[in-house]
Length: 174
Image (cartoon, rainbow, N blue to C red; front, side, top):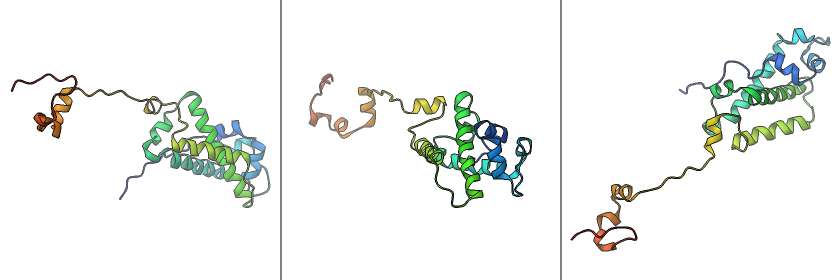
């Protein structure tokens, strides 16, 4: 049995979502009675919370690929990276709310852009502002010394007499 690896909460709160999208439109999309929900009602609305949770799950599905991020990494984001994550989640949630109201909703530019960002995060072309991920793409120089080569006990070491003296090697006494 596998161990679950997921955040217990959404990466974007309803209040944060309302800073990115019009509360009137979200109020209309979340209402099942035809009466627009107020911004205060949206803070505790189950439909908005479910959309934000589903959107957070979609972000995790993209970001956890290949161990690039963990839920703890995403929760630890600060500054503009945290705001970028919140915007990404709120944009996906908005699409979920649109399709909840109208299952034939056309794919919008917002949805295309969000999916492109998720794709680039999955591939590592975009990253969140975490030092380990930023350093992961940097090449590291590693030099191999003659002692390291000798420890490998390669054929050239075992049968040294057959291969002759190499460039910087000293001649060993017979």
